[in-house]
Image (cartoon, rainbow, N blue to C red; front, side, top):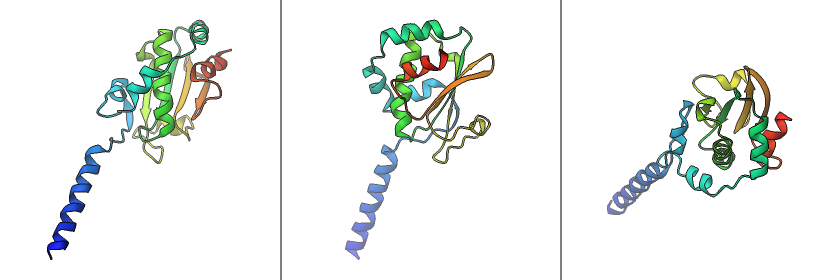
Length: 159
């Protein structure tokens, strides 16, 4: 009986520790500040700080982006590709001077669903997906991975 109680308390302790360390899965329309929060997305800031975008490509991207371009961005906080590309994408936007208010961020669960279901309207099957819109019309998208870099792939969409 004593061994059974010890085993039970050990299991409860490990279960509690696992719940405390697991980052929450965020879903729905989300403010960008939420993914920058180390408590909800501890992977974001270190990757953002360490990424060095190609300055020449960023300068060209800045010229190529229409002033009123907007971005629809879909991702999953649970997804390793999102964790890789979100910090790079937002670093590139910061360096091009694109205000965050021109980005609509939607997070999906592991089944790639959000409460708003906007991912269905735009045919998002993989995350992350970065969609460039100009006057409400899609100009292109980067899906899940990049060929060269996030800044080079975005620039290629605009040329």
